[in-house]
Image 1 (tube, rainbow, N blue to C red):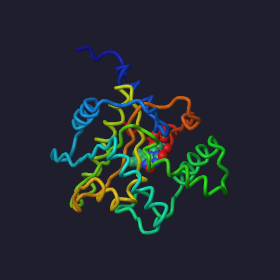
Image 2 (cartoon, rainbow, N blue to C red):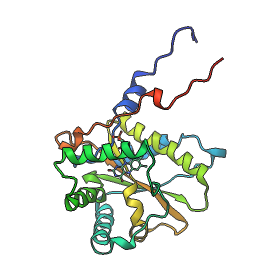
Image 3 (tube, protein in one colour):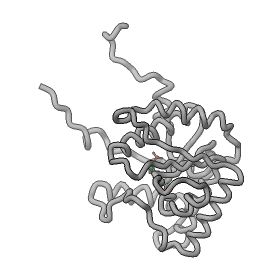
Amino acid sequence: MNHSTTPTIDPAVKAALASRRSVRAFKPTPVPMETVRKLLEISSRAPSGTNMQPWQAHVVTGAAKDRVCQAVHHARNTENDKHVAEYNYYPDVFPEPYKTRRRKVGWDMYGLLGIGREDKDKMFAQAGRNFVFFDAPVGIFFTIDKSLEIGSWLDFGMFLGNFVTAARGAGLDTCAQAAWCHYHTVIRKEIGFSEEQTVVCGMALGYADDDAVIGQLVTDRAPLEDWVQWHGE
Ligand SMILES: Cc1cc2nc3c(=O)[nH]c(=O)nc-3n(C[C@H](O)[C@H](O)[C@H](O)COP(=O)(O)O)c2cc1C
């Protein structure tokens, strides 16, 4: 192999990585289960410490998806205070620069949808779209053994990164959803998984509805200068 020229990223790999975004409006077009199988299988090529492969997935479609969505919708509307996530995704207080980045994506999204900063009811309703998987035909709950340590969560992140990229490679779109974590008791009851497992996140999977306004959301990234230091001679 000739390594004398600067390597370029394979165009297909680059396109899958660069075109991925979190999609929050899907078309009803179904996704064949064989495709979902293939995506999960290829994603499991992710590295994991001592090859533990800590990922577990629960794929929900059709009536099973409707049931869990309805149960969570009910819980959210009647007893929302009772539902607390089993792990902290976010800190209680957001330090900079994370606070500014987080606010920007939130206001950009609500701005696109014409939701004002004081309009809590509309914000609650928009957040509720999580719990129909943004109308995606396939929902996935990813779970992990509670006994595992933070390293396995790192492995899980690698697996999920593979999954969202592989989905793009198949012309599909995704949205990872930590929002579901609050309702782990409801999800566990509806789809039936062990108390030893906790919900890492949900995932919406399907084809983006390109006509939806929310699809215009573009998120930016900090330039490399902000977060890379090169240590040479
Ligand atoms: C683990 C994880 C959980 C997320 N949870 C949610 C969620 O519950 N609802 C949502 O709308 N977006 C969620 N997101 C999407 C992020 O908001 C999104 O990745 C970020 O704003 C960057 O935008 P992009 O994915 O379009 O590049 C989540 C992303 C990750 C990685």
